[in-house]
Length: 347
Image (cartoon, rainbow, N blue to C red):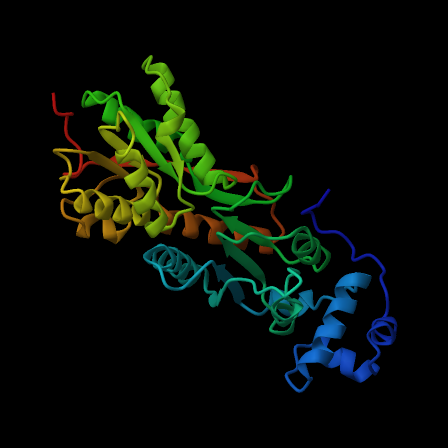
């Protein structure tokens, strides 16, 4: 079981053992550990694999980290308005706390699927006081590495259920799914479909569970053919909407579990000459800027991304000071933002 409490670093193999395992000199192994660039790629690969295989733990420089005034933010991508909202929240909270932020896009992996050690070692080398991970899919070895080096960290909207004790901040996804579906039910819709993200992702499964709960509470039969997964991909969502339209009895409304996927839904409906909301009511999730740009503007469930990020930064500051939050999971409320993409079904 992964522990998040600060603990003494367990004894492990020396750098000499790692160097011998990789077939290199100790100075060369040291260069790899310290993130130096003057190492051949093949040599770096051998040393990195030896580090992982032997469980080498670099001595933490935590005293330097305490005084650095620097935190890292790891985001899934820098190309989306989602990341922009997260960056905005972290930046504002960091400014209030007198901290500077280093932003990285994702944790790279080796060809074998293992996490790249270079980024993690550079984290220590620059003396970061803590890390925020947004939509990051951390591996067990990354959790262990962070805990062994006593680096405080907080997850923002974790992809998978984190290990016990790991601090995370997210939105009330289940309630958001309930709210979206209840809105469509209140307009008179009974044939309501859902286009979800990844089946295994926490936020997606919670939103679908909320959808199902709302239907059950209303006494509406749940139709398995009305539940589709598109992996949060706009083009896949377009295909899933086409599939729904080709059913013998297509839905009259659809709850789409992200605003980005709603773009694909709009595209599929336009291809068939169908209009929103006259022929199909659509509800999204996130309330990204794209929701307002669509024609008609998208009714959606707002999750407070900037507030989530700011909350995570404030929790991280407390952890850097040696405090532990009362609860490891913080959920912020979602709410429905009504626009022009929903109406009652045609009789």
